[in-house]
Length: 152
Image 1 (cartoon, one colour):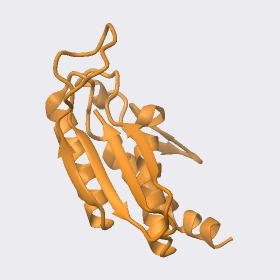
Image 2: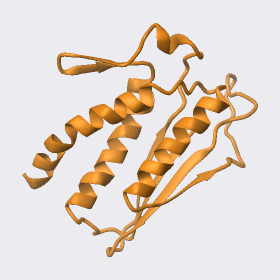
Image 3: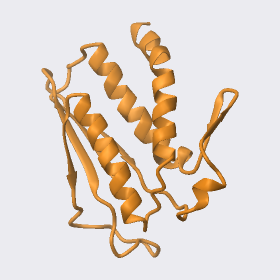
Image 4: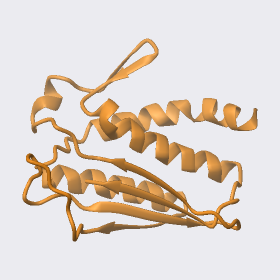
């Protein structure tokens, strides 16, 4: 029940984070946009108390549409008092080309939010950020290390 109540309280902040993330165009080939969104995510994780940094990928699994240069990763670690390690993973790149945001900006209609990349995977990034925030508010530290990895 306490976790549920905190999640309900966190909902407006999560929607604001979704808007912030969706409002940054971060297509897989858009290094400028990926740098902007990576910095925002790093700063949010650092503000939550994580040891957060940007990391250049050294090994890249390449599919047929993987760009030559890929975006940086965000890695943040939170030290706990428990023994088990946890990793939360998401990605910040989208398939949308720069300029498409003007035609499809973030919006909320009723109980649904819309925007480019919101379902793949900017919502995942937002949920991770706010899950960590809820854990902090609960003073939950029953883990060894909580690692957040957001790739570009």
